[in-house]
Amino acid sequence: MRVVEADGKPIVAEVSSGSDAEAKRVVPGLEIVSVDGQPAEDRIRSLIPLVTASTLWYARSTAVAAILNGDLDKEVQVELRRPDGAVFGVPLAREPFERRPAAISAQVLSGGIGLLRLPSFSASNLGLKSGDALVRAFDDALEQLRAAKAIIIDMRGNGGGDDAVAERCAGRFFKSTAAFPSFQMRMVTLGVPWFAPRMSRSVSPRGPWQYTGPVVLLIDEFVVSSAEHFAAGMHDSGRATTVGHTTAGSSGNPVPLEVSGFRFQVSRWREYRADGSLIEGHGVPADIAVRPTVADLANGVDRVLAAAIDYLDHLASR
Image 1 (cartoon, helix red, strand yellow):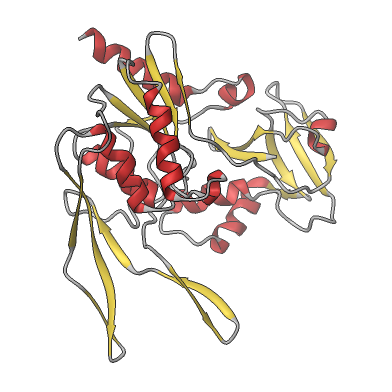
Image 2 (tube, one colour):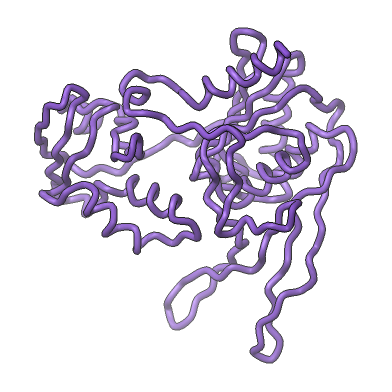
């Protein structure tokens, strides 16, 4: 079961097919009131300190998503509130929330607007063998939208992956070289930490053709790392408008280390946007801020996508 925050409350957003929750008629739009007798807000606040994050909004959303987490062999007692205000309790078996590997896909919406779903810049997360395979999948999807009057790229939940892959995807939207976020590497000399001079990055046109129409990026607080690199570069170059919620603010390029059996990650760089501001701790804001409501989740309405379509329709009418 997937839980998100809507209207300031933890709300069921998705129920896995065949799960215990589905069998007990738990549906999207229900509010979680308490978990094992603990009020939902108290539980969320207790989880936030356990989340590794550089922004409060990412930490809180991650805690909300984990509100039902616990031992898989222990049943959890959940109190839920229906949209009409009625509250009921239900015991649920804890089950892993399993997602099939997402895929890059494209479709043409009514009105000639293209929708390109871009769930990750990690080949392995998409069930692909290499970054080259991911770029080919992206190109194949984009080819389907060549005649679209505008393109919406749905990046929500994109946890990043490979900056080089992200830049290759971005190259399909530029007719000339464009500056992308720059980096400053963390160095250590004789035990003394310091930062190297900033390294500039740029994206060059790629592919047999480049899409030059309007582009909108759908973003949320689960857009992380290489996905933020893509979003910041597309936005700050003036190539795309962002709709949704500020991204995670996490682009430290961590390296895994192990000391005395303990495994941890250490950030290796700072990433800077075109105006010199850091992505770490700030994220990439949405030009048009939109959040789903409880009613949206209950009725299967994608308010963020609808806002992007409205924006593009308004743009076309000017």
